[in-house]
Length: 93
Image (cartoon, rainbow, N blue to C red; front, side):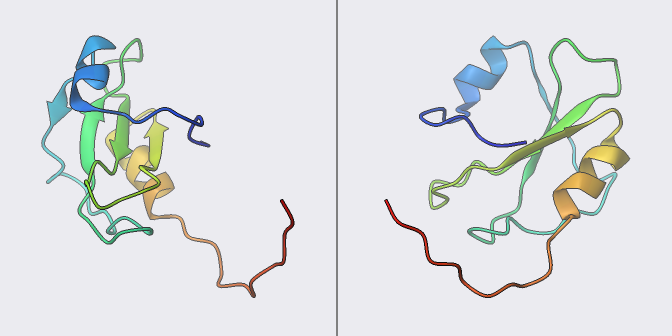
């Protein structure tokens, strides 16, 4: 799920959406692929009772990635997915 430009999922923003933090000890997750921090697991507001989002909220992370899944296991599977290493691509801007 791409992060919207200019949106940083702060704790207050997440709570305002109706989410609450839950223990992530029930699933194994890899560290954040951008900063190496341990991610957090939250309930997904408006989702079913088991829907979860996993996100990185480290102050050192400039990307703040976030994924969601219908269950904690599905969210962890998406979080842990990594693409194969590829060569850098030139872009212009």
